[in-house]
Image (cartoon, rainbow, N blue to C red; front, side, top):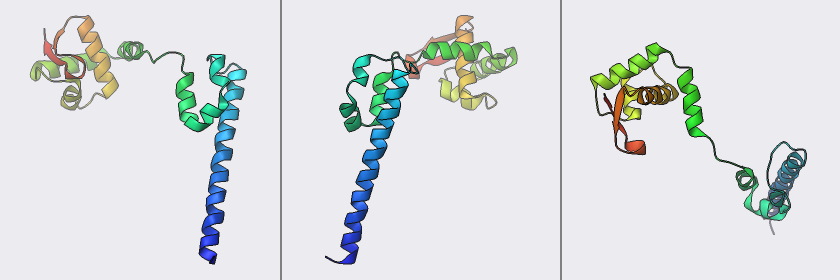
Length: 144
């Protein structure tokens, strides 16, 4: 065996050993966090560290989530922080170009961010200032 082949073999062993050590350390930290009450998860998820090692740390974190994100609540919070000026800017954009989707409205109202457009559309729907056509991502907005 030549020197290059030996070095490659040593390097591959080192990479495998480091990867295994890192995975075990992540599982240990997550298990400790669960035991200390940082995350609230079923105990059954902690009792299977070998399965978590095989699937990786990302799969373990995904499996420990107890409930999905409340997207509507996040939009409502963003809407509360919105000024009337920004809401009127969005309504002007809808009146100028009816039938646009939220992404297109964001481009039309260049001063608004994605979250501001979402929050503004939420407010305008609640006030019944706009009507919608379509579903989910294909929703088009028209002035009422």
